[in-house]
Image (cartoon, rainbow, N blue to C red; front, top):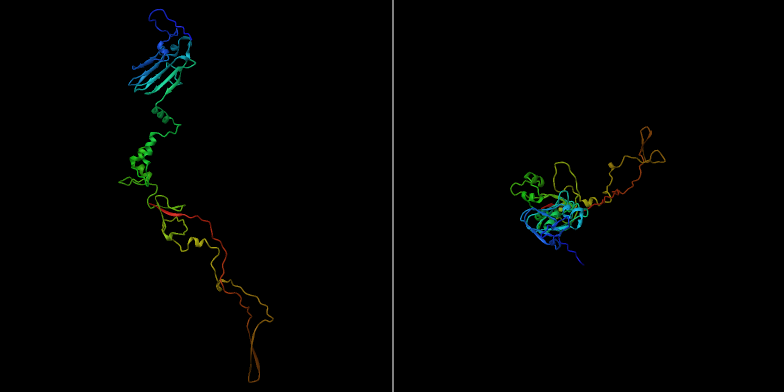
Length: 341
Protein backbone atom coordinates (compact mmCIF):
# COMPACT_ATOMS: atom_id res chain seq x y z
CA UNK A 1 0.00 0.00 0.00
CA UNK A 2 1.31 3.44 -0.85
CA UNK A 3 0.45 6.72 0.85
CA UNK A 4 0.85 10.09 -0.75
CA UNK A 5 2.37 12.63 1.64
CA UNK A 6 1.56 16.15 0.66
CA UNK A 7 3.58 18.97 2.20
CA UNK A 8 2.68 22.61 2.31
CA UNK A 9 5.15 25.25 1.39
CA UNK A 10 6.39 27.48 4.13
CA UNK A 11 8.01 26.27 7.27
CA UNK A 12 5.60 26.05 10.18
CA UNK A 13 2.49 26.53 8.05
CA UNK A 14 -0.63 26.23 10.20
CA UNK A 15 -2.89 23.21 9.81
CA UNK A 16 -6.23 23.93 8.22
CA UNK A 17 -9.52 22.08 8.71
CA UNK A 18 -10.68 23.47 5.39
CA UNK A 19 -7.77 21.68 3.70
CA UNK A 20 -8.45 18.52 5.77
CA UNK A 21 -5.06 18.75 7.39
CA UNK A 22 -4.44 16.34 10.25
CA UNK A 23 -1.83 16.40 12.96
CA UNK A 24 0.61 13.51 12.70
CA UNK A 25 0.01 12.91 16.43
CA UNK A 26 -3.66 12.26 15.80
CA UNK A 27 -2.84 9.45 13.41
CA UNK A 28 -1.18 7.48 16.18
CA UNK A 29 -3.82 8.12 18.85
CA UNK A 30 -1.52 10.20 21.03
CA UNK A 31 -2.47 10.66 24.69
CA UNK A 32 -2.80 14.32 25.59
CA UNK A 33 -2.95 15.24 29.30
CA UNK A 34 -5.03 18.22 30.40
CA UNK A 35 -5.17 19.87 33.80
CA UNK A 36 -6.58 23.34 33.19
CA UNK A 37 -10.30 23.83 32.74
CA UNK A 38 -11.99 24.51 30.45
CA UNK A 39 -10.42 22.80 27.47
CA UNK A 40 -11.81 23.00 23.94
CA UNK A 41 -11.55 19.97 21.65
CA UNK A 42 -10.14 21.12 18.32
CA UNK A 43 -9.66 19.58 14.88
CA UNK A 44 -6.12 18.56 15.86
CA UNK A 45 -7.50 16.33 18.65
CA UNK A 46 -8.95 13.84 16.20
CA UNK A 47 -8.29 10.22 17.27
CA UNK A 48 -6.55 11.39 20.44
CA UNK A 49 -7.13 10.22 24.00
CA UNK A 50 -7.49 13.25 26.25
CA UNK A 51 -6.61 12.42 29.84
CA UNK A 52 -7.89 14.84 32.45
CA UNK A 53 -6.01 14.91 35.74
CA UNK A 54 -7.79 17.82 37.41
CA UNK A 55 -8.45 17.71 41.14
CA UNK A 56 -11.69 19.62 40.68
CA UNK A 57 -14.61 19.84 38.29
CA UNK A 58 -13.48 20.01 34.67
CA UNK A 59 -15.31 21.17 31.52
CA UNK A 60 -14.32 19.77 28.16
CA UNK A 61 -15.97 21.82 25.41
CA UNK A 62 -16.45 20.27 21.98
CA UNK A 63 -15.95 22.61 19.06
CA UNK A 64 -18.72 22.94 16.52
CA UNK A 65 -18.97 19.82 14.37
CA UNK A 66 -18.94 21.93 11.20
CA UNK A 67 -15.61 23.38 12.27
CA UNK A 68 -14.14 20.03 13.28
CA UNK A 69 -14.93 18.18 10.08
CA UNK A 70 -14.35 21.07 7.69
CA UNK A 71 -16.66 22.70 5.20
CA UNK A 72 -19.02 20.49 3.22
CA UNK A 73 -19.06 17.78 5.88
CA UNK A 74 -16.18 15.86 4.35
CA UNK A 75 -15.30 12.69 6.37
CA UNK A 76 -18.05 13.55 8.81
CA UNK A 77 -18.19 10.20 10.61
CA UNK A 78 -14.43 9.84 10.94
CA UNK A 79 -13.89 12.42 13.65
CA UNK A 80 -13.66 10.77 17.02
CA UNK A 81 -12.06 11.47 20.39
CA UNK A 82 -11.71 9.61 23.69
CA UNK A 83 -11.88 11.36 27.07
CA UNK A 84 -10.55 9.63 30.19
CA UNK A 85 -10.80 11.03 33.70
CA UNK A 86 -7.87 10.31 36.01
CA UNK A 87 -8.62 13.21 38.32
CA UNK A 88 -10.87 13.38 41.36
CA UNK A 89 -13.39 15.83 39.92
CA UNK A 90 -16.16 15.16 37.41
CA UNK A 91 -15.37 15.89 33.76
CA UNK A 92 -18.34 17.34 31.88
CA UNK A 93 -18.23 16.91 28.11
CA UNK A 94 -20.32 19.68 26.53
CA UNK A 95 -21.26 19.74 22.82
CA UNK A 96 -21.51 23.03 20.96
CA UNK A 97 -24.84 24.83 20.86
CA UNK A 98 -27.79 22.52 20.16
CA UNK A 99 -25.60 19.54 19.35
CA UNK A 100 -25.99 16.54 21.68
CA UNK A 101 -24.25 13.37 22.81
CA UNK A 102 -26.62 10.43 22.28
CA UNK A 103 -29.46 12.93 22.62
CA UNK A 104 -28.19 14.47 25.88
CA UNK A 105 -26.99 18.04 26.31
CA UNK A 106 -23.83 16.85 28.11
CA UNK A 107 -22.07 13.78 29.38
CA UNK A 108 -20.38 13.28 32.78
CA UNK A 109 -17.20 11.26 33.14
CA UNK A 110 -16.39 10.27 36.73
CA UNK A 111 -12.97 9.33 38.08
CA UNK A 112 -11.39 6.34 36.30
CA UNK A 113 -14.07 6.31 33.61
CA UNK A 114 -13.76 7.06 29.91
CA UNK A 115 -16.02 7.77 26.95
CA UNK A 116 -15.25 7.59 23.23
CA UNK A 117 -17.45 9.71 20.97
CA UNK A 118 -17.75 10.17 17.21
CA UNK A 119 -19.67 12.54 14.96
CA UNK A 120 -22.89 10.92 13.77
CA UNK A 121 -23.71 10.30 10.11
CA UNK A 122 -25.86 13.42 9.84
CA UNK A 123 -23.06 15.57 11.18
CA UNK A 124 -25.46 17.16 13.73
CA UNK A 125 -24.45 15.42 16.95
CA UNK A 126 -22.27 12.86 18.66
CA UNK A 127 -22.63 9.11 19.17
CA UNK A 128 -21.05 7.21 22.07
CA UNK A 129 -18.89 4.45 20.63
CA UNK A 130 -17.74 3.00 23.93
CA UNK A 131 -17.58 3.91 27.59
CA UNK A 132 -16.44 2.53 30.91
CA UNK A 133 -18.33 2.92 34.17
CA UNK A 134 -16.83 2.17 37.54
CA UNK A 135 -18.64 -0.26 39.86
CA UNK A 136 -19.69 2.65 42.09
CA UNK A 137 -21.17 4.52 39.10
CA UNK A 138 -23.06 1.43 37.91
CA UNK A 139 -24.46 0.96 41.42
CA UNK A 140 -25.59 4.58 41.60
CA UNK A 141 -27.26 4.47 38.20
CA UNK A 142 -28.95 1.15 39.01
CA UNK A 143 -30.35 2.33 42.32
CA UNK A 144 -31.58 5.61 40.85
CA UNK A 145 -33.70 3.78 38.27
CA UNK A 146 -37.23 3.32 39.61
CA UNK A 147 -37.80 0.27 37.38
CA UNK A 148 -35.02 -1.91 38.81
CA UNK A 149 -36.53 -2.84 42.23
CA UNK A 150 -33.01 -2.49 43.56
CA UNK A 151 -31.77 -3.71 46.93
CA UNK A 152 -29.94 -0.58 47.99
CA UNK A 153 -27.68 0.26 50.91
CA UNK A 154 -30.65 1.98 52.55
CA UNK A 155 -32.68 -1.26 52.51
CA UNK A 156 -29.69 -3.22 53.74
CA UNK A 157 -29.34 -0.85 56.69
CA UNK A 158 -32.98 -1.38 57.61
CA UNK A 159 -32.73 -5.19 57.42
CA UNK A 160 -29.61 -5.20 59.58
CA UNK A 161 -31.88 -4.83 62.60
CA UNK A 162 -33.53 -8.18 61.90
CA UNK A 163 -30.45 -10.39 61.56
CA UNK A 164 -29.94 -13.17 64.10
CA UNK A 165 -33.16 -12.35 65.96
CA UNK A 166 -35.18 -14.89 67.95
CA UNK A 167 -38.20 -14.63 70.20
CA UNK A 168 -39.73 -11.24 70.89
CA UNK A 169 -38.23 -8.24 69.09
CA UNK A 170 -37.70 -5.01 70.98
CA UNK A 171 -37.08 -1.65 69.39
CA UNK A 172 -36.57 1.83 70.72
CA UNK A 173 -38.10 4.90 69.13
CA UNK A 174 -34.81 5.84 67.47
CA UNK A 175 -34.40 2.31 66.06
CA UNK A 176 -37.86 2.49 64.54
CA UNK A 177 -36.89 5.74 62.89
CA UNK A 178 -33.91 4.04 61.24
CA UNK A 179 -35.93 1.03 60.07
CA UNK A 180 -38.59 2.93 58.18
CA UNK A 181 -36.58 6.06 57.40
CA UNK A 182 -39.27 8.26 58.93
CA UNK A 183 -38.93 10.07 62.23
CA UNK A 184 -41.65 8.82 64.56
CA UNK A 185 -42.92 10.74 67.54
CA UNK A 186 -43.64 9.02 70.85
CA UNK A 187 -47.37 9.32 70.17
CA UNK A 188 -46.98 7.61 66.78
CA UNK A 189 -45.02 4.74 68.30
CA UNK A 190 -47.65 4.39 71.02
CA UNK A 191 -50.31 4.16 68.33
CA UNK A 192 -48.30 1.49 66.54
CA UNK A 193 -47.66 -0.72 69.56
CA UNK A 194 -50.56 0.04 71.86
CA UNK A 195 -48.02 0.64 74.62
CA UNK A 196 -46.40 3.64 76.17
CA UNK A 197 -42.69 4.18 75.62
CA UNK A 198 -42.32 5.48 79.15
CA UNK A 199 -39.48 3.87 81.12
CA UNK A 200 -38.58 0.43 79.74
CA UNK A 201 -41.99 -0.41 78.27
CA UNK A 202 -40.87 -0.40 74.65
CA UNK A 203 -41.63 -3.95 73.55
CA UNK A 204 -43.01 -4.11 70.04
CA UNK A 205 -45.35 -7.09 69.97
CA UNK A 206 -48.57 -7.88 68.15
CA UNK A 207 -50.15 -9.74 71.08
CA UNK A 208 -49.71 -8.86 74.76
CA UNK A 209 -48.66 -11.66 77.11
CA UNK A 210 -51.64 -13.66 78.36
CA UNK A 211 -53.68 -13.26 75.17
CA UNK A 212 -55.73 -16.45 74.59
CA UNK A 213 -56.50 -17.65 71.05
CA UNK A 214 -57.74 -20.77 69.26
CA UNK A 215 -55.44 -22.54 66.77
CA UNK A 216 -56.20 -25.19 64.17
CA UNK A 217 -53.12 -27.32 64.89
CA UNK A 218 -51.87 -29.90 67.36
CA UNK A 219 -49.14 -27.90 69.11
CA UNK A 220 -48.99 -24.25 70.13
CA UNK A 221 -47.01 -21.86 67.88
CA UNK A 222 -43.65 -20.52 68.96
CA UNK A 223 -44.10 -18.02 71.78
CA UNK A 224 -47.43 -19.55 72.87
CA UNK A 225 -48.36 -22.21 75.46
CA UNK A 226 -51.08 -24.82 74.89
CA UNK A 227 -53.77 -24.95 77.61
CA UNK A 228 -54.04 -28.60 78.66
CA UNK A 229 -56.40 -28.03 81.60
CA UNK A 230 -58.49 -31.20 81.97
CA UNK A 231 -61.78 -29.47 82.69
CA UNK A 232 -61.52 -27.52 79.42
CA UNK A 233 -61.31 -30.65 77.26
CA UNK A 234 -64.22 -31.75 75.04
CA UNK A 235 -66.15 -28.47 75.30
CA UNK A 236 -68.27 -26.47 72.89
CA UNK A 237 -68.09 -22.70 72.30
CA UNK A 238 -70.75 -20.12 73.10
CA UNK A 239 -70.74 -16.51 71.94
CA UNK A 240 -71.79 -13.91 74.52
CA UNK A 241 -72.33 -10.21 73.94
CA UNK A 242 -72.86 -9.09 77.52
CA UNK A 243 -70.19 -7.52 79.68
CA UNK A 244 -70.87 -10.04 82.45
CA UNK A 245 -68.39 -12.51 80.99
CA UNK A 246 -66.86 -15.21 83.20
CA UNK A 247 -64.21 -17.77 82.41
CA UNK A 248 -63.98 -21.45 83.18
CA UNK A 249 -66.14 -24.43 82.17
CA UNK A 250 -69.95 -24.28 82.02
CA UNK A 251 -72.60 -27.00 81.71
CA UNK A 252 -72.30 -30.66 82.72
CA UNK A 253 -72.36 -32.87 79.59
CA UNK A 254 -69.32 -33.30 77.37
CA UNK A 255 -69.42 -32.21 73.72
CA UNK A 256 -68.75 -35.73 72.42
CA UNK A 257 -71.51 -37.18 74.62
CA UNK A 258 -74.22 -34.82 73.40
CA UNK A 259 -73.20 -34.89 69.76
CA UNK A 260 -72.62 -38.63 69.73
CA UNK A 261 -76.25 -39.56 70.40
CA UNK A 262 -78.49 -41.39 67.94
CA UNK A 263 -81.67 -41.63 70.09
CA UNK A 264 -83.46 -39.75 72.84
CA UNK A 265 -83.44 -40.85 76.48
CA UNK A 266 -85.88 -43.62 77.47
CA UNK A 267 -89.19 -42.38 78.94
CA UNK A 268 -92.02 -44.32 80.68
CA UNK A 269 -95.37 -42.59 80.37
CA UNK A 270 -97.35 -41.86 83.53
CA UNK A 271 -101.15 -41.67 83.78
CA UNK A 272 -100.95 -37.89 83.73
CA UNK A 273 -98.89 -38.01 80.50
CA UNK A 274 -101.55 -40.08 78.70
CA UNK A 275 -104.19 -38.03 76.88
CA UNK A 276 -107.77 -38.38 78.18
CA UNK A 277 -109.53 -41.17 76.24
CA UNK A 278 -112.08 -44.02 76.52
CA UNK A 279 -112.59 -47.50 75.09
CA UNK A 280 -115.90 -48.58 73.54
CA UNK A 281 -117.41 -52.04 74.40
CA UNK A 282 -120.46 -53.97 73.08
CA UNK A 283 -121.84 -56.30 75.82
CA UNK A 284 -124.96 -58.55 75.30
CA UNK A 285 -126.92 -56.65 77.94
CA UNK A 286 -126.99 -53.19 79.34
CA UNK A 287 -124.99 -54.24 82.36
CA UNK A 288 -122.53 -56.85 83.27
CA UNK A 289 -122.45 -58.53 86.68
CA UNK A 290 -125.48 -58.03 88.95
CA UNK A 291 -125.72 -58.41 92.69
CA UNK A 292 -129.25 -59.51 93.72
CA UNK A 293 -130.64 -59.64 97.31
CA UNK A 294 -134.20 -60.30 98.56
CA UNK A 295 -136.14 -59.30 101.68
CA UNK A 296 -139.47 -60.82 103.11
CA UNK A 297 -141.42 -58.60 105.51
CA UNK A 298 -143.83 -59.82 108.26
CA UNK A 299 -146.76 -59.61 105.98
CA UNK A 300 -145.09 -62.07 103.65
CA UNK A 301 -144.39 -59.52 101.01
CA UNK A 302 -141.07 -59.97 99.20
CA UNK A 303 -138.87 -57.26 97.46
CA UNK A 304 -135.75 -57.33 95.24
CA UNK A 305 -132.65 -55.01 95.38
CA UNK A 306 -130.58 -55.08 92.23
CA UNK A 307 -127.05 -53.42 92.00
CA UNK A 308 -125.46 -53.22 88.53
CA UNK A 309 -121.64 -52.68 87.71
CA UNK A 310 -120.36 -51.37 84.31
CA UNK A 311 -118.03 -53.54 82.24
CA UNK A 312 -114.19 -52.78 81.81
CA UNK A 313 -111.51 -53.99 79.31
CA UNK A 314 -108.57 -56.22 80.16
CA UNK A 315 -105.10 -54.69 80.94
CA UNK A 316 -102.42 -54.62 78.17
CA UNK A 317 -98.77 -53.28 78.04
CA UNK A 318 -95.56 -53.92 79.95
CA UNK A 319 -95.07 -50.50 81.54
CA UNK A 320 -91.60 -50.06 80.00
CA UNK A 321 -89.99 -46.84 78.71
CA UNK A 322 -89.48 -45.87 75.05
CA UNK A 323 -87.10 -43.73 72.95
CA UNK A 324 -87.21 -41.69 69.72
CA UNK A 325 -84.52 -41.98 67.01
CA UNK A 326 -82.36 -38.88 66.25
CA UNK A 327 -78.82 -38.29 64.97
CA UNK A 328 -76.76 -35.51 66.54
CA UNK A 329 -73.39 -36.65 65.14
CA UNK A 330 -72.51 -33.34 63.47
CA UNK A 331 -69.18 -32.83 61.69
CA UNK A 332 -66.55 -30.89 63.62
CA UNK A 333 -62.86 -29.92 63.69
CA UNK A 334 -60.49 -29.99 66.65
CA UNK A 335 -58.92 -26.77 67.92
CA UNK A 336 -56.50 -26.01 70.72
CA UNK A 337 -56.47 -23.10 73.15
CA UNK A 338 -53.13 -21.37 73.68
CA UNK A 339 -51.98 -18.25 75.50
CA UNK A 340 -49.19 -15.81 74.56
CA UNK A 341 -46.08 -16.14 76.66
